[in-house]
Image 1 (cartoon, one colour):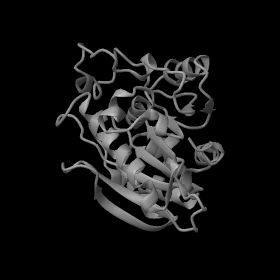
Image 2 (cartoon, one colour):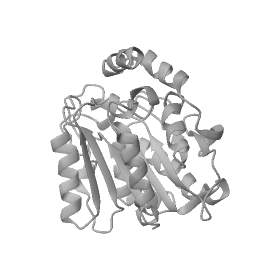
Image 3 (cartoon, one colour):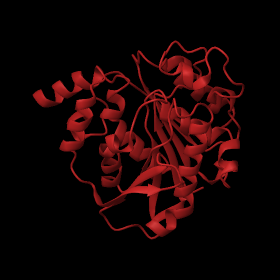
Image 4 (cartoon, one colour):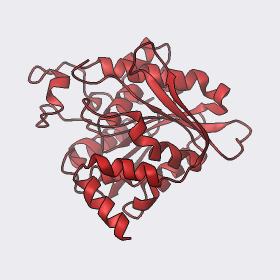
Amino acid sequence: MALAASLTVVIALGGCSAVGTLNALTVRGSQSVHAGVAYGPLPRQRLDIYLPAQAAPAAGWPVVVFFYGGSWNTGARSDYRFVGEALAARGVLTLVADYRLYPEVRFPDFLRDSAQALAYGLEHAARLGGDPRRVFVMGHSAGGYNAAMLALDARWLQAAGHAPSELAGWIGLAGPYDFFPTDNPDARPAFFHPDYPPRAQPIEFAPPDAPRSFLAAPVHDKLVSPERSTRQMADKLQAAGVPVTLKFYEGASHTTLIGAFAWPLRWVAPVLADVAAFIDQAPPR
């Protein structure tokens, strides 16, 4: 408990060393990890694949393609092994993907990368032992934005030869869905502040045929407004007739919301159990 409390404080303050500690303490939940698999020709177009240790169901494991946060200018897939292992332990074939970041690229290039990574998951699900009818896109923070845009704005998956209708659902954890103009100095250059591009926010898209949605946020998120982004996005989708599961967590922060996927921090919020239940209960597309 002392270790867990210390980790909570460090992660809440944004400590990178705590992520390494979480990964070091992570119990292996996969039978194997295929690291650095290319989904495109560029160095950042790589993903890691976590295969569940248990036998696959007859139709295959559900599949999650996960995108991490970092204000579109930091992050690496290797930092999120604890997410891949946690989901694999729940019987979810998980792909943790990198994407290009600022200053190498700006909007919308990181969405193009994300669409290619998700297309890889859709196209290779069956070969990997997954169920191609039960593919989900998931993200935290900036990665939650990426996941939302792929699920709600058909432009990006169409460019990769696919469509949001192929998804069984999408999962957004503390994602910024309505945030222009942003006061986050790290995120501003990725969106050409103050000249924000049009049609660049998920809140602008809530089609009635959007995939079913799981939206979650900390009650007291100090980085991304849970009311303006998560609740408003959920309300707009529900008004369009889209099935939405909405969760708010009292004890979590913006960073510990994703940290709670690691076993030392699962007492912070039951987000892993809630995400796993959403995946289990979602019908095939």
